[in-house]
Image (tube, rainbow, N blue to C red; front, side, top):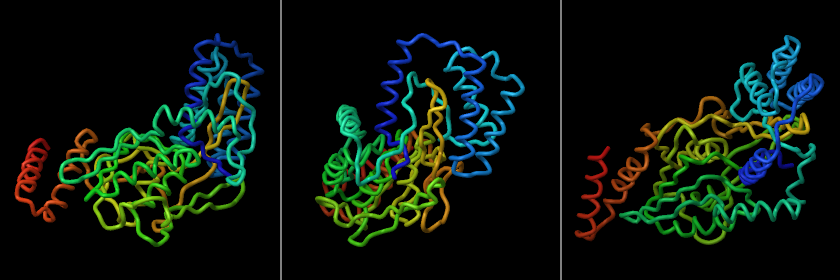
Length: 357
């Protein structure tokens, strides 16, 4: 079952919730409302959070805050959500974990299996948002020296975004080197991560990652696909991935797992440090608890990047990462350039980049 919350759903939810929140007046919260929400939150944390001991610790913390009267002065759902988030984060920091004010939140429901697919209405809405955002593919550009630059700001639901990913990777396939910019990428669907990673690998399947789900005590494995449509960039040409402190979740999944097999060079800043897939649970008609219910496991390191982030191979400020990667890529491709005029132009560009750095 799919238990992560894909970036397309988060974007669509944010649009819907922001509009509803602006139109709906603040609802006064009674003591009974608060007590019921805290108790349901505590139950969900104990029963669903990926680490049972930490879930129990957070559950005990919010119950204790309720008992001490720390929620008595909270007047609105939004304030309550912020305070609950602060309290559970203080008990156990996890950047994926939060309480959100969502007017008229939908009740909990099991997620459809991959074979069932998404409900038609959800698929249509997600597709509309995806098309408007070009499925988060912001740019595919050919730089001097036949270096391909791909800026990707999210990993949309694979069921609706594979074709866009294929088009972008096919366009970049003839490059002599590639720069993938994930500095503004906050995550999404791990199946889309595997789809795009497949274009950077060879004709043998590669085990990229696993996700373990506590509730079902099961593990889902993610592998590269040698049979992806169109042309692959391949396993041998240099690839640089740009990161920042904003790079998060599935974007870290892409970076961490390809770095572990030494396929990429990571340039930029340490990433945000969120490795736990999430599931939303309603704890009140206007409150949603976003709770990590799984954890990523790399087959090589046997660990993940939770809390620590992905460390760059070449550490540099995020705003200088593109120039640095461009310079590194030019140094890689220059030995293969025979045309003297082209070589002179690339050497000039390299000198300009390195002088700026």
